[in-house]
Length: 305
Image 1 (cartoon, helix red, strand yellow):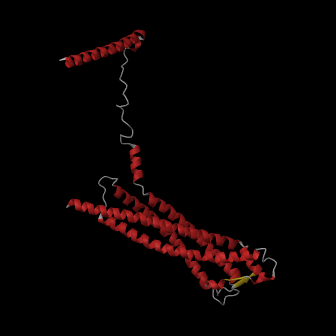
Image 2 (tube, helix red, strand yellow):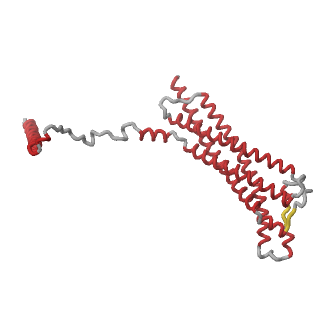
Image 3 (cartoon, helix red, strand yellow):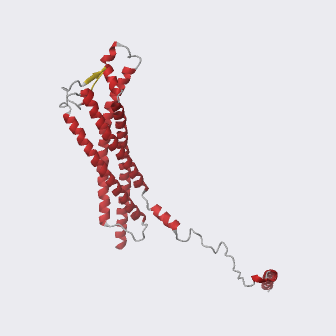
């Protein structure tokens, strides 16, 4: 009986305290109306507490849409596309100008007879046209791979509700995986091939540095330091003069064509290396997305049956 009486007494004290608080608030409001008669028509609305307010993160809006869109961005494919575009642009642009400078150096110094380097000129001209085709192809192929990355990333993360991949989509993804592997192996060969002119120009430049060095400058052995361009196989052995020695070789190294061609070949080789790295990133991203899509398609088939 005593606990029941104690709880009833506590409830009575709480109710009396609430009445006092309410009466005090009513007295304050009445005093305000007495001091400012024009405020009687105003309506007082309760201020919502923090618990009643809806959080901007809980309500769907622009923030959630932005997070959802950022979650569907294939960052690996995006980085690979930027790297691929940069590498192909460097390789094609610098390689095209460097090949033209190489032909000018050969015609002016190493092979004065045009019939000796006619085949080389045709090959270089053909390579310049191939460069145009490579630039156009990889510009289109990079955009297609980026779009395929958006498709597979959205399908893997299931960002669009019931958005599912189909057998045709998985087949296209597998085709891009195979094609990217083939292009990656091909660009490894291009990267190795682009290092050949860098090696050739480096040998010529290092020979010129030996001629300019104080140990050999002013001695009779300077004219015996030569570079025979015929040993690289780019011009025939009967080409004249084919070999440049001494001060004539030093003059070639001081020309603008040699300086520009040498450095442009280095940049073109670096661009080919960047393209190889981009294709490796493409291969990893496309292979991972294809494997996940294939695994999920098998799970869907198992759940149906």
